[in-house]
Structures are given as structure tokens and as C-alpha cells.
Amino acid sequence: MGKTVNLTQLKSLEKFVTEFSNLSDDYVFTRLTESNRTPLLISDTGPVRFDGMSWFLCFGGCLDFEVNLTPASLTPNSVGVTRPGSFIEVKNIDWSGLDCYMLFVSSDFIRDINFDLNILGSLAPMGERGLKENPVITILPEEATLLRAYFEILNHNTHSIHDTDSTYGKSIARCVIAALTYQLIQIVSRRIPADSGDRPKSRRMTYVHEFIQLVHEYHRSERTVAFYADKLFISPKYLSLIIKETLGRSAAEIIDDYVILEAKNLLRFSGKNIQQVSYELNFPNQSSFGKYFKHLTGFSPSEYQRSV
Image (tube, rainbow, N blue to C red):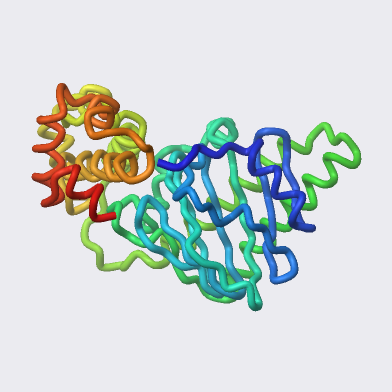
């Protein structure tokens, strides 16, 4: 399955890159260029799961990677965001002319910023509307320049904290990362067609975003719509309705996508046998897991393992 990576491990990047900063266990910033190459980005053991959020901003060169087994490419004037717990695997880097900013933020720090879920969920067009969507979008040069400014302010602020033991440095970092995210949300929102129909009301969108977050948290053990509806204090029928109307796919399909993605990663990378995987995903036995997996993928778990 590949290992889980935290910010402490990412701090080892400092040995390889000259433009680098970090604030305790809150976030890590680094800029990769042709002269700042790090072998740590490409893993021979498959994807790694980062336990926080990631922001990537590319100005030059190309970086090919997979997020939750979905191929994506960072090319000039593109930006990408990954959710906490995502599997990330760098496949190839074109170092010629590479200029890429990377920001890794811990889940605790994200919670500390205290985003409104309805706002944070507006990043949906980059991935949450469907697991198979590309997590990277192309942006205008002037938008890329604007986002670069936020990264650079954050980097300078972090160095200032270390140099002067600033009392307000962490609060400034919260505000800069919040502003960066809101700016990105605004950029994404410009790409949502104006004629997309009647937009869901605010409360509905909150349910949708909270549902996605709950599925992300509980999909390894819970697969029923009723479980998530109960967490949201609404009926399964109403949850199914708003998910279908908002995302164009049923709540059950989204749950299944998360479970199958997790199952594929476990079967491919964890070294566990099929029975162990079925128990880890809270199936009563290997047989029920096999039927579930084959129904949704067309392959038995053993056939999938042999094909990869």
C-alpha cells in the first residue's frame, strides 16, 4: 500500500533543496527547480499516503504523478490540490526548466484554520465531484503569478519566525494559507459554467461536503448510505437525493468508489493476502469481499492482483 508520510519525514527534503521552510509540525514548503533535485519524490515502493493536504503550483517543466491511482500532470501554469489521506505517487519528472512550488499542510493545522466546510468543499471541481477527475487544473499566467505571491509570503514569514521568534508568525501563517485557499476557490469558481442550472442551496452543499468528508473518514469500515445519513441527522432518502442532484452520481456509488480504491491499493501494495484485506475493510468474510469487488470491477481480487 505504500507508507504513510507525515511532515516530520518531509522535513528531510531540506537536505536536498535550497529553497525550503517548515513550521514545526504544521506545514512544509519547498520549491523544486532544475538545480534543486531530490530523489525522495520518486518512491520505488509505490504510492505514499500523506496525512495532510497538499498544494502544487507549477511554472515550468513537467511532473507526472498519480493521486489515488488517477494519472495527473503538473505543467506550466497549473495547480493541484490533494485531500488528506490521498495516495500520491510521482511517476516521472522533467527536470529541464522545472519550477514547482509545493506546500504540505498537516490535517491538524487545517482544522486549526477552521475553514467553513461549505467553503473548503468548493474545491470540488478539482476532484470531489468524482474520484476519477483530474486533481490538476490549468490556470492563467496572471493567476499563477498571484498564487506564487502567497507561497512566497508564507516562505518569507516562516524564515522570519525562525530568525526572530515572532509571536505572531503562526497566526500570520494561518491567514496566508487561508487566503491562498480562498484565492484558489475563487479561481476554480470562475471555471464553473454560469448556465450550470439551479445551484444547490447553501445547506444542501454543506450536507454534500460533510458527506464526502465522512466517507473519506469512514469508508474503510462503513459502506451503507444509512450510516452517513445518520451522521448528518437526515434520512437516507434525502441524502441520496441531494448527492445525486449535486454530484450526478448516487451516494452509494461514491461510497463504493472510495472502498474499491482502498481495496485496490491494499491488494496492490500492502503485501496482505485477500483475507487480510477483506477484514481490514470490515467485510464479514473473504467471500463477501470477493463478490463485492468483482461486482464493481469485473475482476476477482486475485485476478486484480495478478494483473498489476
